[in-house]
Amino acid sequence: MTFFLVAVAAGQSNMPYSAYSNLIKDIGTEGVYVHYNTNLLFTGEYLHFKLYALSKKNQSLSKTSKIAYVELLDGDGERKIIQKVKLVDGMGQGDIFVPTNLDSGHYTFVAYTAYMKNWPSDTFFADDVVVLNPYTNDQKVFWESKGKDSLDDGLMNLNKEATKTLSKDLGLALDKSQYGKREKVRLKVETKPNNSGIYSISVRKLSKELTYGDRISPVDYTKNYKLVDLDEASNDYLPDLRGEMVAGRLSSINGLQTMNKKVVFSLPGNQYSFKMVTTDSEGKFRFSLHSENLDTESIFQVWGVDKDQYSVEVASVPELNLRRSPSKHFVLNKGMKKLIEERSTHNQIENAYFNSKPDTVKLNNNFIPIYGNNFIEYNLDEYTRFPTFRETLVEIVDNAWIASNNEGEENIFVRDFEATNMDVGYNPLIIVDGILLQDHEDLIDYDVKRVETIRLARNQYVVGGQIFQGVFDVKTFDSDFAENYQKTYLNKISLLRPKPQKKYFKQNYGSKTFGTIPDFRQQLLWEPNLELGEPTTTLEFYTSDLEGEFEIVIEGFTARMQPVKVVTKFKVQ
Image (tube, rainbow, N blue to C red; front, side):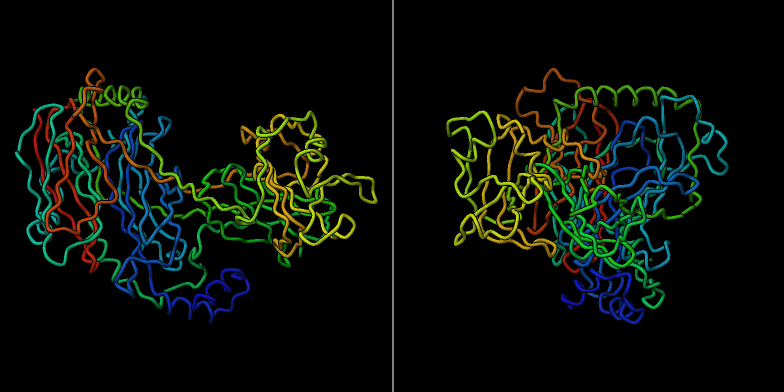
């Protein structure tokens, strides 16, 4: 099965219909449920989310797709925000910062995988969201809304499904029902038998005036998801089995042949990614990108002669064409003016003090270069510095040298373990800060004072069908070679990449470090990875300077994939 999936991923466009059908029957249907923190957002606030990819066939979290997509669509179905989300063991997480140039209005928050597009879009996770932009006077969309006022019974009907599940799934117990400002809250979560699993928790301020009612619960979504018919599949979309899929097309400026051309992809940086792929009969290429380097700026180039006669275009994520009317309306009234002004002011203050309360990014430092760990590294600061790159190779770097080819161009060569200078046979792979260099003279003439290390790998390597005698890998001090390297054949393209996972800031007043810093947090706690395996788990967090009612929501799935949503509330005075 694994070999079959890898093979079809490499040649999707030529895959027969029967093969698609068999693949879909083997995998089954896939779904995505999203726990998110609020459905009424001001510009300048964050929408936090946790994704659960579901496998109907296996009754488990789906391990099929490695990438999901979340989007924010306006009332006309036009895409305003899109993000890729990396899925690990069927789960993903992230956040969307609502920009201040987004108009007030009703929006749709959508989540799906590429594989799910084989079925009608009503199988996607889609929920109504209101965005209120307090920095504009244009709130016409809310004044003219028809239907029931958003204030009416807004909180009375909130989380009805959660109330039903509270007693049978998880038990929530607070150490008290009312707290002071900046006080520690202790929440005890009692896990009933067979309900261990992975959940997400949100603690956020409620407003009886600024509310938008119910959100989709995991119970509601799984009921609808179970109705998906396997036989309704369109058989057009493969899952992202091995990570991000990057697809594109090669075009020729002067009508040159685009088939069977080698396209080189580089994602520069300390933890660079490097690929070489061959175009098909239509000049198209496709490869899987599974890199811990989540930078967006990439470089494409064509390998070999006439490289400056080609351009590269990367395919974007197709529009969903999903237009839906909101199931409920948000209505403004004059009594909300003061509340909106206060919340907007609090947001501005919180954003101004962001550096004092930062989220941190989870980094993976286990980078292994394309040539593995079999290399010799020269840290040039450990040697006598020489004024030119040419002298540096002669005096410091063993088994590498510069020689001229038949056209009079100077090239760098790397000696194999059993070769002499005269029988090398192939050029080495030259990499500078993650970029493949086809013109060796650009490195030979480079200011060697900016070079930190040179790594030399002497074995032969085959990359994308191209043989290289060794690897000559250069790292500069600032890893900024790509920023200043200009060639007509380099195609610098910004890619849609997943955001790095964050560890969200958690206020702690156990020390007095934050004593003089304002604290107007609406969101007291957001923890997307809450493991409940013990009979009792105790969570602690602190209140802010805001008074009022706060809501604790825990959502997720048990180890047996039973959907769970539980809610409790407390007051701050």
